[in-house]
Image (cartoon, rainbow over all chains, first blue to last red; front, side):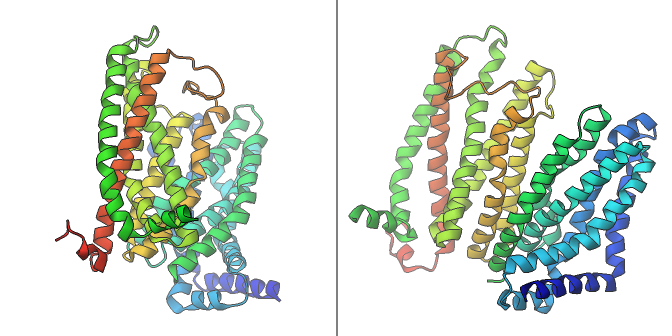
Length: 223
Length: 247
């Protein structure tokens, strides 16, 4: 019963996002453009590009996540769906998890699939491309999960989108350090799995705690 | 039983306001005395370091400020948990009053750290784990203050920023243990509770006295600020207009 409701919630959010393809595409192209700007800023020296590539892609992914997070709850807040979710028998944290899942499928996963292509622009070798894609695959759900807390806290607040960045970007730093660090460690001849395991650990932790914190935040905001 | 009731009695702004007013002078005097004693020790009693010369003396400000920045965040998170869990008004006000002082000490620790880093490492800033975590702590304080001021309803602002403080408190242990996690340029913690201190006793004494001074200062300032918050939020309350000092 609950599973069926959550599944329909997930499909509903994906369908709603697909009806507004321009929004989804905009965040994705922001990722591409932001990452492509760095060679213009630092020069197109291949060794330098190889060194900064993983970090640039990760930072661009972080910023692109900021763009799409604002929409996670705002539409449902505006048309009253969020209040109905609060009243429904489904645990709010589970409903939040379904919404975050839909958000990741629509904004995070395409970014992961696009990353190897952008990585080629930075002259990354195959092994690092694969590692980068894997680290983003593990890391982008963390971005959606932690970001949901901020999106809920800044719901209906003055200057919400700037505030969202102010609240959430500092919390992203550990994921960024280990996610990009895993790839650069491999380039330096070290094992990438230490950083990758830590990103995986953060994913496991945030998968459990972030929906609870987001649900608490939504209750405060809709009080 | 009676002591429990007394404790709850002071959880109400009406009873805490006069109590805070009576405590402020004591903590202010203690802050002044400890800070002056600490400064005297750090400038005239503590010996010159055989490696770092006179420049090391900034640690008498730097280390206590860094301690206070983390400690205040923990206290703020504690009050936030109380405010969320018990829905206590005073806890939210205390958390709100602590944040600016904590942010001030974090900024002070970063600035004095860079004054120390320039002669010691030859750089104003290095991307070392502890410096970076202290910077993240400053970002968290700023995020807390920004979120609190962005929400108009003070009770909702209290609860939303309390949740944010609790989410951010994950960061404080990372700061503290980052030295062990990433072994980088920053020297290891020189004060430890488990082993003998690696510095002269007078240096340690100076740092501890300064830390006590900063602690007393924080309490005095936070009590003053919480009184302002109370007068702002409860300006229509009967107990406030009944006070002698308000008339």
